[in-house]
Length: 187
Ligand code: APR
Image (cartoon, rainbow, N blue to C red):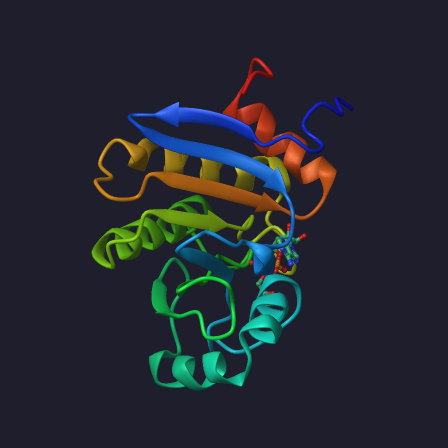
């Protein structure tokens, strides 16, 4: 495996929007206006990303989420960030692989809707996890291709969002995203 992406962010600019991939924890993204939650339909705490964000945000996040739930696969809602270092959380419900169809469209919709909500809230920077690739079982390579293609496709129409970061939990996930964002290995 190529280790060159281990610590340095991999970057690419599309129409003035910087798209990058780093290894890290979605709950520790200081400096970003919003972090995206790989949520459940009830918008409550869970394992993985949802657990990390709700733990760091504190109980106020679950309280704010309650009247906004349930949401359907492909949908997104925005809340404040509570005790997180981010002003906002954008909660996306990804498809459960093998159950929610069409999976690719629903996954793409998560990224699109999240960016629309970020624009509406006049945010400049958003950090995404790899939605649906954990408990929801979406195969990593396919999910990463949908994520990167959708974000790069949307970048053209963005007016305020100028920085989009994929925060990947382990080095093999980072490598897959890095290969799609900067296929030459450059940054
Ligand atoms: N930071 C960044 N990435 C993380 C973190 C974290 N703290 N924790 C886990 N991940 C990674 C996982 O390794 C996986 O690649 O995020 C990806 C998404 O995993 P999940 O959080 O399981 O999200 P998803 O597959 O969309 O499943 C959502 O899981 O926790 C439950 O309540 C949640 O039912 C919902 C479901």
